[in-house]
Length: 61
Image (cartoon, rainbow, N blue to C red; front, side, top):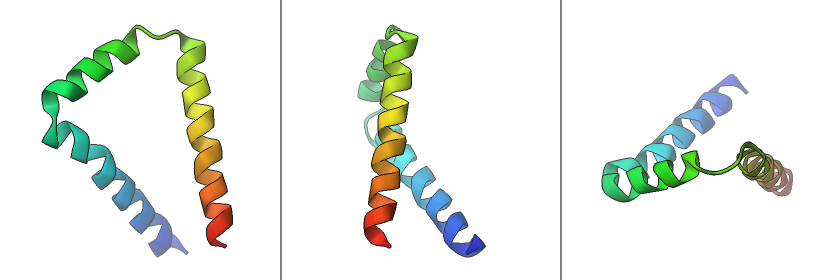
């Protein structure tokens, strides 16, 4: 179980690092735009991603 969790974390880090590594200027512009969003918008995006991830995990079981 712990191995699976560590592998999932490693995969998440790889995926998170791909965009800034491949497209640094676009990533910077995106981060600057994101910084101008309201806190509630950012929170809603985060909650949506959590729900999507939980749904995908549920589908895989």
